[in-house]
Length: 554
Image 1 (cartoon, rainbow, N blue to C red):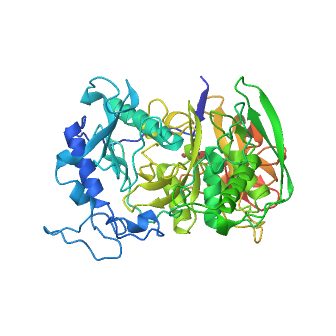
Image 2 (cartoon, rainbow, N blue to C red):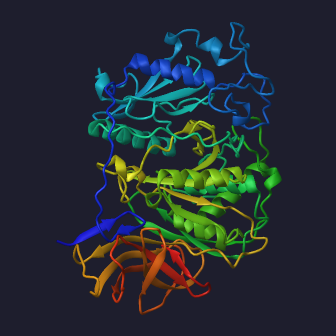
Image 3 (cartoon, one colour):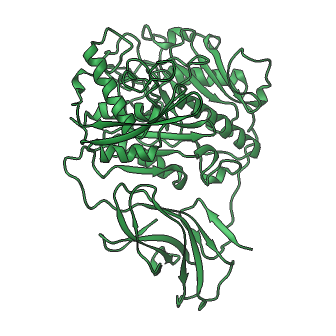
């Protein structure tokens, strides 16, 4: 029987039996509403700023009580809070005097999906995937898992409001649905999921008070729908524009024509184009928040021009119900149209462990740059910005919805070991999750960027091979994560038990791969004349690049 191994970065050539140790948590089971409320109260009390003391021009996380390690509570501009009876005025403590002061505003179950509390009949606590609690004021919320096999706190916000029914940011709705599926799957399988790791100190949200949106005044230049109304900007263009506003680059895009489309109510699509390079970007005129004060017309024009041109360069498909573009076209636009360095990195979650993925995000955040983040579901793809870290294992997301719902969220234990529907292999939880990082101005274009290629799967014709046998291995979906053309040679590397590369079997042809997501659907490489000693060896896909010496893992 032929076997196809998919979704991993390496494939074992021989099978080795390993003994695993299993621990049983006899207390594992559903978390009740009362227990969830107590957990929510604790996380909100621990991570709440002193209201009224924060400077309006400082970023949200710089005001939070999470700037130290877990367990130490700090206040903005003050020393550690006294644990005695005396408490600062105007803090969340005054709102949460008892456990009963929290209000249940949302619940989720596999049977009902994600719904606002009170919109359906009675629901068994045993079937609840998560609870969302908020203080009576609505300032702040906490999302608590409905089963103790997973981490207790899935997300929280110390001061932003949890969106009402019908006002949910697309990105947050996607993430909540992901949480529902994740908790349900783990609970059904009865496997203990890993808790988030604490990875150093907190990072205040880099975007600070930049809280843009998709409609007025941001969409003043987008094409109009059949009713004469400007279409939404699109979540991808909103995310990119907020990052560009943070970096304040470029002064002017490269001159050139970009193409986008407008979809009518009947499904008909009209192609449109825009000439870039005619306008300077007035970063100083752009406000961080257009929901307060009275922004000038020049300021509104500046932000609308930026967001329209970003969307057009991303090949946006505009429509009245929502506008969308592919993330790989967005990445190409950043480099090709907006003068960012070819260091820009496009990363796919499904090919990385949770640890590697979180280190990628943290490395970029600690360097002082936000990350474009996107995820797909059956309801479409959504983009947002990862721009901070709470020091307790959760990352800050700006959903691009005028600040609505912004907060700290767990990336969840999405490794394939969880099993079940959607665990790895490019579906379910991590379907289409990508990150675009390294938003560096193209002051100097680097030519020595290391090649990054992906191989989706290897297929072996049979299970066992003789030492002197020549046999084919099929590579599926060999494609580029580079933003520049490359001439490459696909290959397979044979590694010994110590991880040393001992043999390379390469394809007889070289291929030109023009850009991101371009590549070869399938090809075969013959492996033979290995002359290997008895032992266990690992086969890994490699790529050779014409402009550089050596082999690189794919």
